[in-house]
Image 1: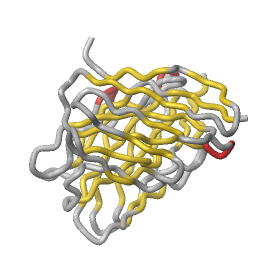
Image 2: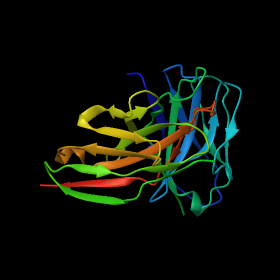
Image 3: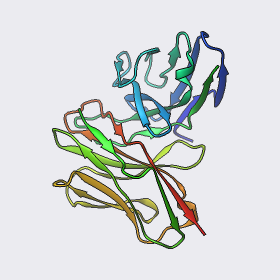
Length: 115
Length: 115
């Protein structure tokens, strides 16, 4: 089944530890995104990538890094986790062709708790 | 910069009653508009989108939304809700100059349908 997979589904992490959230899509979309979802704040963009080999910062990038070595994978790394990074993380992908306005497809999310 | 405001954090409604979920946006340029739905413990899926043309947009599950440029609004409506419509609904905007197709989300509205 085509779509986006995320791993792990949930994780409890000690503060100060390093963590990588994985995201893989099989739709050959050129753009991928990472969001965090917090109650009352909706989804906020952390980082994005318009094509393999390029990345950009979103609204809340501090404390996070990403890489895009190929079209399918877009891992998100927390170098040293802090409690304020407790959130639900969603990966998404979309086509970019000329103008924007294409639907973003979302993964099932990773629930991260930092203690 | 653009922003999205969803005026109601929660909307309780009885089954088979009509519902309107409000969304207002601000942007200095023309925009594309989206409504996404999130069922419990799932990712987001697209309900409908406005790119251009008719200001009344029909989506899945009987939902529709109307783009009002003068009021910068994109309210979501359904004439008769079902228990299964209980979910979180997110309004999002992408501006036409945004080559990365990035979305700005509102804070979400939790629709609670009661029997």
